[in-house]
Length: 421
Picture 1 (cartoon, helix red, strand yellow):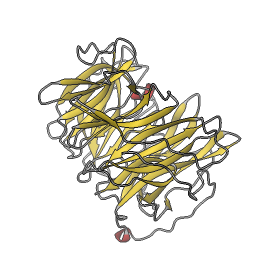
Picture 2: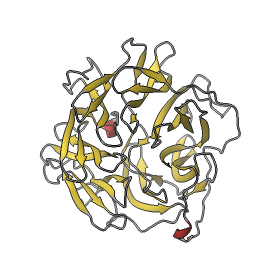
Picture 3: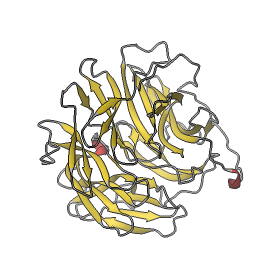
Picture 4: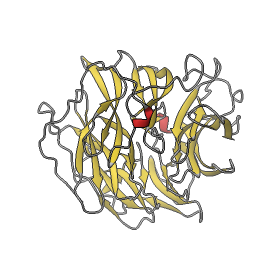
């Protein structure tokens, strides 16, 4: 399936204004039909970013709402857990009526170094801070810090992990904890070995809420992580793969199927996997946790290369992976999305190049698609298309139809979560 982008009037990517939000009764909050997208927009001054704000919009382009105001030198994002500017964790609650966000300070040298987590309603009504203390991102040697925060797909359950302690090996165990949105029933689900791991990042829930996939950062090398799947009911963890590139340090972030039986992840030549062991660099791999079978996700003809960085998604039934890739006959400047069978049998391209709506953009500039979420029925994907030259990037949000229907443009911004039936 391919599609073309036609010219249209769109909301400007950069729109600097302050908004005041009235406290509407929470009983009036309703799910936008047919689905709601959470996304961010960033302001720029002289080519440098100055702030970001969170918005929601219907996936048909209706009901645009600004949920947080722009504040100079403050960035509203869903979580500190990210790779290649794409956030990994679930922000929405199961009903799509509330979402988690982080208000953080940022510099190029330090990244996101200070911030507080909040919950905001569908009308921009913000709750008190989720955690005590002045800085949720502080180093563990100073006090409690919180890295990945991810809302579960069923019930009122939020998973979070402590900030990595990169200075004192063994002093602060790396744990995944669960709590309700009110802070009640806060308890440790699973803790990694304190001597082998500094921290945990990239929490991904299975669709049925029964499993969590996490990356545990190794003490021997903070750029590398081991991949675990945790049973939410029992708190037991299964080691899936070792010596993977850490998502926070540019490694690919994988995904887990609805029932938790199938995972995809990026491997390296240091993973020592006899099936998914690239001679150089990295590659994507699928693993069935019931049978232990692993499959290398590659094009045997070597025409298409699947980018082993950024985010990879998996279909709810675990039969397909959705990966960024480039065709050697076109060039690395054009990164499209591909549907790849997790049994390694076939793959197909599901996108065409998006077209910049800004006439000042270089038509030969870098463009690449990044998957965000797969619909529960596996028939659609929410994706961002980045169109970048030497200036600020233009990012378009699209809903891609995988079943032969039309795909459509939603708005400009960086999507990070999608609540849809």
